[in-house]
Length: 68
Image (cartoon, rainbow, N blue to C red; front, side, top):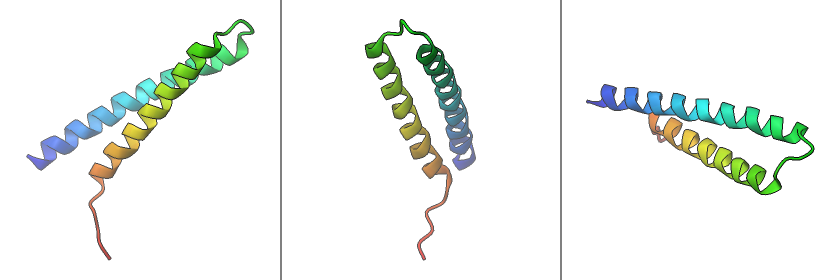
């Protein structure tokens, strides 16, 4: 059961990382375009940050909580 949950978490992390990379590329392309939409860029940056936060949260689930 725990192994299945870990596998699901790993798959979700990979999915989020893939979307995070795609947003990074899109943001780079927008930055190079002189006619980019500032509002759209801000939305993409917020989405990218949201993804990063979720990746960090899920990675925390994979690492056992060790108390010293």
